[in-house]
Structures are given as C-alpha cells and as structure tokens.
Image (cartoon, rainbow, N blue to C red; front, side):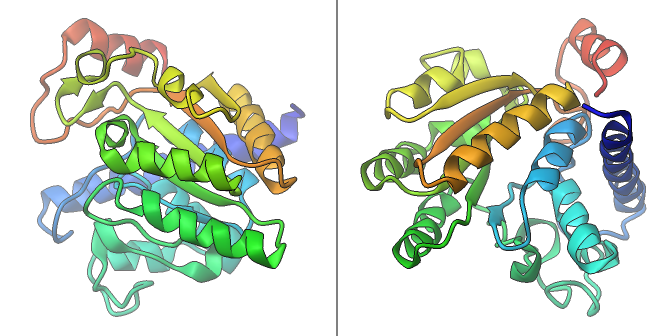
Length: 265
C-alpha cells in the first residue's frame, strides 16, 4: 500500500481513538447519557470498513461502532459533529438526540442504525440486500457484528438465507475475544468463528484486525466479491477490545499487556 494511503488510514484510526477517548472522559463526568461501549483497540477494523464502503452502500453498526459512524459522517458530510452531538443527546444530533449511543443512524451516509438487541439486524440486512438484488443495483449491505452475536439464532438464519438467495451481504465479524465476559473459546463449539460460517457454502476469510494493511485488503476483497453480484461474504477480524463490558478489568494482566502494549493497531 502506498505511503500516502497508509497515512490517511492512520489519521482515520487516530480520529477514532481521539473521538472515543473524548467520549470516555465525558461519560465519566456524567455528560453522556445512557450506556457507552467503545471500540478502543479495534480502530483498524473500523477504518478499513469505512474506507471501502460507499455512501450508496449500507452498514448496520454494532454497539462499539462510534468510529465508523463518525468516519462516515466525516467522509460524506464533511464532519463528525452530528454523531458526537447525538451521543450527548443534543437536538443537533443525527437523530435529534433521541438515538444516543445504541440507536444512532443516518441513511444518507450509509448508516442504517444499530439496535440495543445485538444481532437483531441480521434479519434486516437481508431485506435491504434482497431489495437491491431485485432492483439490479450493485450495492453492498454490511452487517457489523461481534463474536457474541454468533451465538444467537439470527446469525445462522441470516447466513443460511443469504446463501440460499445469493444476496449481496457482507458479514463483518469483529471477534474481540469476549462476549460480555465470556471468552470465545467457552461460548462456541469452534474456537474459530470463521469455521462456523464456512458451513453455509459462500466465501469466508479471517484476518488480523489490528493490521490495517491486511484488514483493508481483506475488506476490499470481500466488498469486491459482493458488489460483483457473486453473493455473500463473511470476514472475521481477530482483534481485542481495550474496554471491559463494565467498570473494572476482569482479564489477565499478561493478556492486557500483550494487546495494549505490543499489538496496538
């Protein structure tokens, strides 16, 4: 990848980190209403997705996707202030301050919105993709999910229907190692989530989600496949979240050091 392109992606990752660290500070002061789940440590995955999706595509973000939400606003509308305003409950937010962290959406930039019930949009993405396929539009419907969503019935139902109908769906699975506080290896029959997806018969891949070059290339391949009309694609990002699901740290000290000090994207 060319140096200038890498620098652009690096700036995107720093924008995400600064955005979310600012949110954390204000949340601790009581200025951000509701819940806050950050994607700190997962910046490379969000930057790679944002750089490859267009405003005419759509993405259904999960609860840690403030970064891609902000980048989509910045890329397609010139700033990310309306997303920040939304998180503060301001009337100037993308949803008038009524959506907050878990329900913000702006279809004009491709953000079709999260839902507090993780995985519920696994069905919604099928409807969007089916409509685009029926119209013959070369657009990509992306569902951004976490490893915890893989344990829900909607996950398997969605992959099965996307395969049967050959829909233009891109499943971006951000595997950060834990669903709430349960390690992936204790939650699923297969320690590699990508192996669960392979059973549905369409292309699947796994990538280091903290390597921006590898992640960007993998996303470009996935989106190119879907946009060409070749059907769905599943991509698993192996990464790690800095923030626990709640206050305090439940993970081993050596694991925290490995990811924060040695594998910061």
